[in-house]
Image 1 (tube, rainbow, N blue to C red):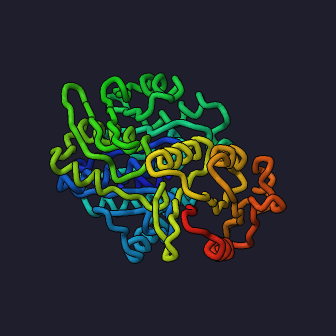
Image 2 (cartoon, helix red, strand yellow):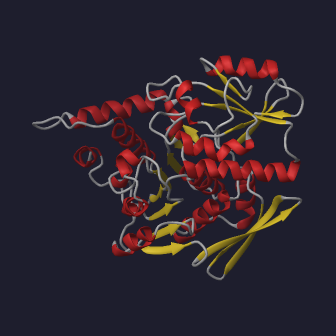
Image 3 (cartoon, helix red, strand yellow):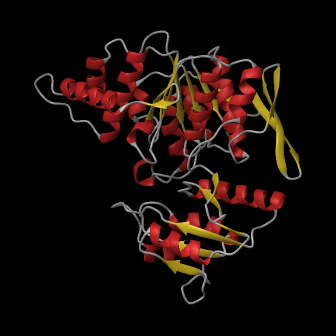
Length: 392
């Protein structure tokens, strides 16, 4: 990829463009969304590169909050294809490398103030790491993608520290990370900044709900109302992003930060909706043990603040290569009945396979488990059987 990158962007991104790279097991998408919102609020032109997408590929590449057009993407892909075919031997590129190069091309063409790049997998060897970060954030460290990164949390920490650069800020959003993360970043010469040390935050609650929070960076302290994003862990992400922007002189004044932070939303991340039938629905993409634990904590906090629903139902599908048992175990204490189905993807686990990963007592005979052939079928069954006070 580096060879093609050099042909397309021999001088890299424009010198004025600040690069914020976000790595981590969970929380990367939230950090990107927070950074994008704050940069826009401060009047800065910003490009954001994230993955995966929910509906359209264009969601992955945004300029000032708007997905780029089909035409812009296709033009970038064509330019990349021509560049990789130059020379004596064509350069082979992966799907993610193609997408990353397209995003970087479009960002360079737009000559932006800042770009926020989400690492796809790991960090050290990820396509995004072809660009030197002016500041890097690590949102969290957990076990995921073990076929690629291994099941050693210390090794995973070293891989994610690979986005660090000498003399540049390296911001750690959580304090429960392996020691290898900080040690590896320091070995690369990065300026490591840890939550609870160089920056931090405190939460205040009323009636079980977070009402406001305080962020501090060095001797500076800022008071904010609660975030638009759901989950206590999001405040660590927000504090890390604010710190990243401070280090680059890009953080907007408090009066501009307040509406940007309060108005945050992120589709599919602890998103709460109400169906036409009146059924309250949570949508979340938890796909590993840590993210499932965060979802469970969020649901418990909601129960404590608003009361537990009459029944909590779960419509669930997952990939074969994920730890289904760990994810379902984290949620099982909160679920009264499961609807299991296979996603429409080659990597999807079968509904029967998911059923075998469930805790004892959840089976078709018990009435606490249903197996559906599709998401649409399951939603139809759920809608037909829900009662007032249920939650999905």
